[in-house]
Image 1 (spheres, each protein chain N blue to C red):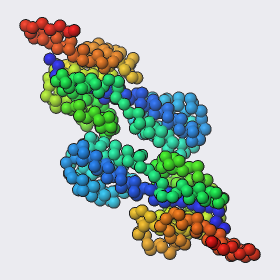
Image 2 (image 1 turned 45 degrees about the vertical axis):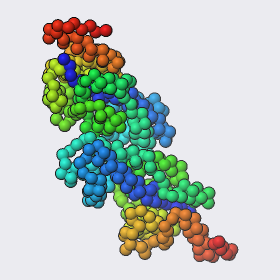
Image 3 (image 1 turned 180 degrees about the horizontal axis):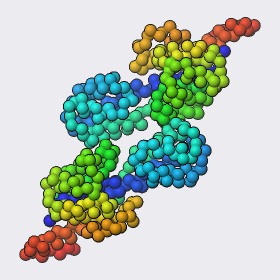
Image 4 (image 1 turned 180 degrees about the vertical axis):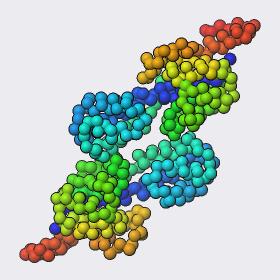
Length: 244
Length: 244
């Protein structure tokens, strides 16, 4: 019987990819507005290349963008980018559609909830607190604090231990087939792949580790009802339960 | 004849000290609200001590605050501090009272305007652009880009050169007797000490370098009118001008 639902954070609870794209577009737009002598498409394309090479947590994107464009360093242009980037991130931070309603529904049905995420712990907590999501969760685990990253089993085992559940009592919901789904499956959890955001068609070689695939979180309560039915049959319940 | 007015940025054009105090108070308040097990006064006092020892540009204030309070590191509390700090800085960034009106007045009267400031160039430009002050100024010089800090003469000389003025054609307005007033005087500029913010009663050993002392920027147009009169007499103008 499933008692605990673990969620990944980025692109599962928080609409990160969409927000990052808006923030980057607004940053370039504001840099051009303040005199960056390059057209939007050229600068934005170069920024995307840079991010794919240096990673999204690299903290000198705008600085390096000028180098790539063979422009002199210019703190005014960089500041214009930083301002628009941060303003967008602050103003448009949102949960993925349906998140708050579904979390309430799961809580009402007695499930305990947890977050298992990678990333910088302070930045991850910033998103959780800005969205006031903290009250929903019994456990928030950020892998950096254990010195590992998903899919390392340690982070999932720690999550189970902290919340007091056995692997088969827990289900992991996440957008990444490798880190979330393969990772959780390794330690014996059930898995729901949320096909959403930039990983919606990547890492498909791990698709076999997904017990369920959904493209909307609205499907989650239904899956949990189904699993309840399955378990009760397996355990030889005398009362037959039909999923409606 | 004065043709150029240079301003310092922090606590001269931008109300930095007041803003920083608000931001720090709100940060501690939000940390306590999210579970920091210390009362407000203890935590705030400790933060002020930390800032006076490590400097205000140290970027691990909240992290070190926990160490000083002998508490375990906790990314949730740190994130709570960071959020409230940034929200306050974004929402309450303001010019010093009267700035915009006075800049317009000086421009209408034909003065060219410049900023000469220390500090991180991107952060300084962030303040200028967020307040949309850039359009008022012909020249913005941030000392870091020359590898020096005020009162080093190089930054003042560079300001004069870029704007095309001789030292006696320029006046420097700033809140710091050492960096702004002593610095500008060294290269031969006139000086106006703006007695404001946390340096209003410090560095008084450099008071002699201030040609004028004001506690409101509203006095600036009047001082400039006075200097006009003085210069024309010195140059032996045949027409006597009386300041009204």
